[in-house]
Structures are given as C-alpha cells and as structure tokens.
Image 1 (tube, rainbow, N blue to C red):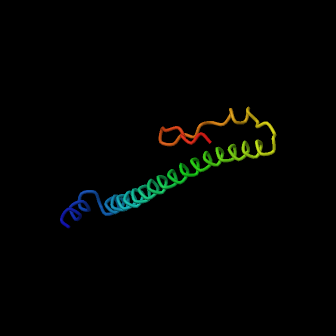
Image 2 (image 1 turned 90 degrees about the horizontal axis):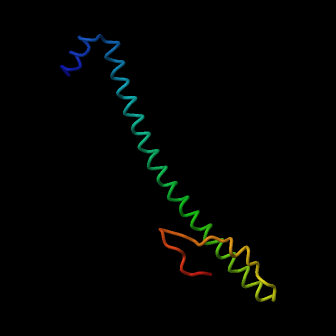
Image 3 (image 1 turned 120 degrees about the horizontal axis):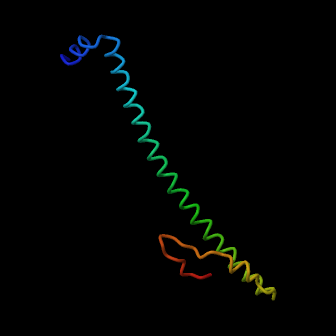
Amino acid sequence: MNQAIGLIGDVGLPIASGLIMGYFIFLIIRQLMNNLVSDIKSIQGITKMLITRASIMNNDIIRIDTVVSSALDIPPDLERIARAENFVEDGKIDARRD
C-alpha cells in the first residue's frame, strides 16, 4: 500500500492510474493469448486427424476401384493407382498396401 501511495506521490495520480490500467490490460491480453494457443493446438490435432482420414479414404477408394474393376473384368486404371501416394503417419508408410 505504501508503494502505491509513493508511486502516486512521485508521478501523480493520472500517470499512476494509467500504469495500473496498462498492467491490467496486459494481464487480460496475456490470458486471451494463452487461451488462443491452447485452442490452436486442439485445432491442429483435429486437422491432422482429418488429413489422416482423407488419406485412408483415398487408399480405400483405390482398393474398392480395383476390386470392382477385377470383378467386372475391366482392366484397373494403373495410372491412377500409380499416382496414389503411400499413406504416411508418424513417419511410417502404411503397411497394408491395399
């Protein structure tokens, strides 16, 4: 309490109140930024899962296409199969080779 009175006596009431308000604004902005960082991390996790699902779905569609093509005695589209990328998750290539 003596420090606050000493600050007011040294710099004046308007400047001291401005410094205090600036400190509270700093605290509020810091809290908002911490919440944003945690939200961004959760969104990054969700997007990584969606990318994984899209890659798996691409492999499944190619597998279904080749099965249907062979069942109907139609030659499979080898160019499409060759263009498909291997599914990579956590640095490991998908071992299923569907």
